Amino acid sequence: MTDVSPQASTKASEADRGKRRTLWLLGALALGMFGFGFAMVPLYGLICQVTGTQSLGERAKWAEGGASVVAGAANESRWVTVKFDTTIHPDLPWRITPTERKVRVHPGEQRRVDFMAENRSGAVTTGQALPTIVPFQAGAFFSKLECFCFARQTLDGNEVRTMPLLFIVSPDLPEGIDSLTLSYNVMRVPDDGRDLAAK
Image (cartoon, rainbow, N blue to C red):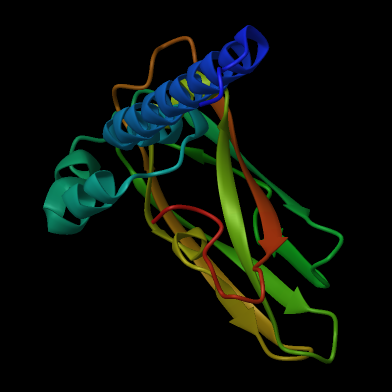
């Protein structure tokens, strides 16, 4: 019968402590991931509000007639200037320009602005526009009823296409904001076809 040396016993207890610590860390990680899954919905709503991107719920509300209610409540005593800006990622051989660089609208009034998209390469390419509203405080008061940014767009080689934007600025837009900018950052969609923005 062999005796276990104190040194071997110490190493065994340290190994046990290390295993327990690893188990605790893995358990905490699993619990954190579970909690993050629950937090995703409110976080997504907050990101949509800050960046001016519409969530599914907002789109559904407008599709069910919410737009007509707001459109009928136009504040004709007030003007808001909406400017448009596009940035194309260098990997995407496109040109996208609005037919109007800026428009003046009454809050509550529906307005359409067309964007001209051109694929300057001979190959089929797919891109997606990610919208941002500046100032960010105006994001919750700007609703896109129809927008090419809702889904990825595929252009054939050298194709030129008109892409519409239909929007409303809410009559509840704070009085201190009389101008806002809608910026599109247009990125090439990965080869696996994933949308770059949550729908």
